[in-house]
Image (cartoon, rainbow, N blue to C red; front, side):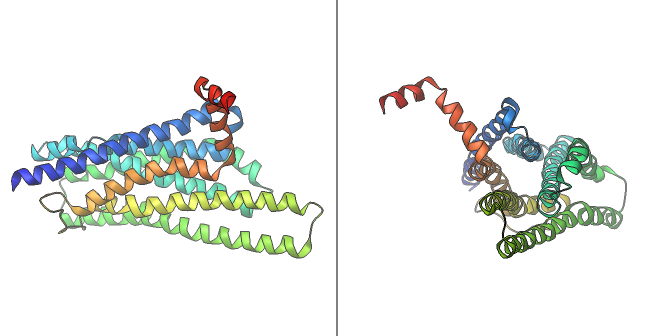
Length: 298
């Protein structure tokens, strides 16, 4: 029975490791594309780079979960806590980047005339604040070593989760609802009043809708994948669910799979939603000698 449990655990960890490595490579490609292509260096893509960096950090942590479990078994508390700290920091940074991207979409759709001025002013402030606050808030995992009563720890942990996790998620949901409502109203206004260049306005709104949907999908994947694991590690309320033959929480394993798969899906979502990404990828493939030979043959 113990051997079967170990085999099941190794299979799961191997699958997580493989998908994590793929996610790291895919998100690294997103960063390389933006940094090496001048036409891709936009504010929207700047937020995507920060999101990709969060995904890479998350998957670096998740790619080696066997280290975490071996540490737990050996009762090395400091190493385990450090692992949880970096994983929590990466998850918090992704949540912060999603909030930042939501603000960017809000400006682009609801305040288009103020967009360039505001985003140019705050972009270089928002990204560092997101990452710094993520690492600072995640220090709460070290509360385990504090000489405090359990009730006092709960009084610290629960408000922190409410303010820095649940509240931002609620704000993201409300803002995207408001953005979608605004897009519908703008579409009706354009159709009612007419325009000298209705086709141009229609294409612009179509691009805005695609970008809003893209970030909304990425945010939804984050919510359904990362939050259960974050709550599991922070509060420990998700319990009593185990995989057959495994001692690790089913909720935690499920969250790890969700995190890895959503991180792997994000670069493909960016490519599918953004025309500039697709065009740049086509340019890269055209410059590959094998692809050039194939074009000549066809």
